[in-house]
Length: 160
Image 1 (tube, helix red, strand yellow):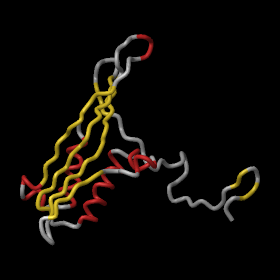
Image 2 (cartoon, one colour; image 1 turned 60 degrees about the horizontal axis):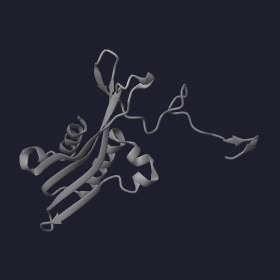
Image 3 (spheres, one colour; image 1 turned 45 degrees about the horizontal axis):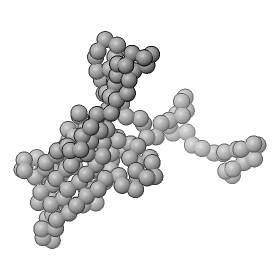
Image 4 (spheres, rainbow, N blue to C red; image 1 turned 180 degrees about the vertical axis):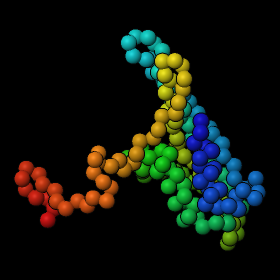
């Protein structure tokens, strides 16, 4: 599993104070399980599997901007688990949180994110993590700066 390290890196980059106190940021995994299916051709050998788990982040005495924290986590989810933002049902709960307000400037914050990581197994037995799908894939052969000027459907213009 590797996503927990990537989230730690994103949080410490956004909030450098988290690196000064090792107790300020804890990350742990629970509710873990492995999903797998038998391979093709009746071999009954798995050609890969998925780690599925809940990632828990605990920030103690957090004094940063909570909006910036939420935006940092959402940007990380966009790269690491994009389907959490693409699906209406999943997007209704990109992540959950609990807050214990300590005073006007500090809070203990717990963040919970459902994650998965796919691992492919090659014929020679080597294993590699599968890349996450691009949330905004470009149209093949169209430069990203190209603007949309018109849409037609059955010869009728949908955009002026």
